[in-house]
Amino acid sequence: MSEQINEDVRALLDELTPSPISAAPGQNMLPPNARCDVGDTPLWRGHTGPATLFVHGWNDTHRIWRQFAQDFLASSRPVLLMDLPAHGASKLMEYGGEVAGKSVLEVCTAEAPIDTIIAHSFGCVATANAIRNGARADYVILIAPPVLGWAEAKRRQGTDPAVLERALEIIRANGGGELGPFDFAGALGGFKGKLLFIGSEADVGCPLDEISRVAASLPGAEVHGVTGLDHRELCLDRGVLARILSFLGYA
Image (tube, rainbow, N blue to C red; front, side, top):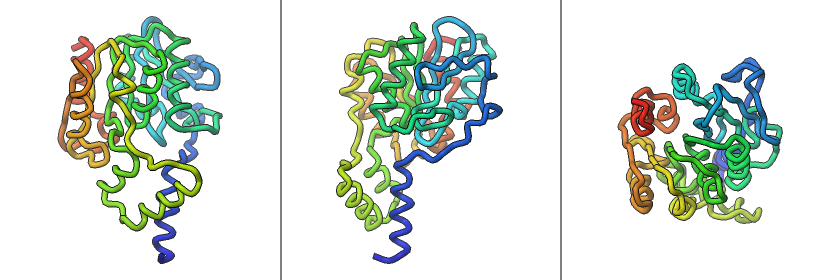
């Protein structure tokens, strides 16, 4: 294997560990007096009452919701913003779907009642794990849920097969699995509220057709598909926000 491929393998493996992201107080969306941590989870609240909890994705922070949450706040709708373990202002070193789900569950329990959970990407896994373990909300909105799993997403995104296979060999040798798809249908099968999946035809790693297939396995789940928006843009687009507001009965 060439040195270049070795460098590419290292870069690919680095994606599986959250990168340090500055969490300086001045970069938080809400002022310091809005912070109301739950255990080790950094949490910020705007307005009182049953809230919408926003859950960010991998290698992100609560600041990804600057468009959506600010709209809620401007309309005096209660908002909760959290940083997942090992992300943003979190001091925890652990990461992964289970520990992230525990963090979401703890927030939902401490801040109950939760009206809505809006999650993006890896945050969808955290949210689904929390729901499976007892978190309650009236509405759950999953934006670009990683329905393929990491390995298949990388294949579809065009990662060099030799690089991906070598990375998977290293993961297996260190006791990791195949990083396959998360079982959203199993985790959300008992959810009694209203469920909306959102995806984009331009998001190769979280393809809309696969998102729709998962949603079809959950009775009553709705799907909203868009074109032209990449994975992260789905959290910033005013059209996506408009669909969410309509789903929640705010429009």
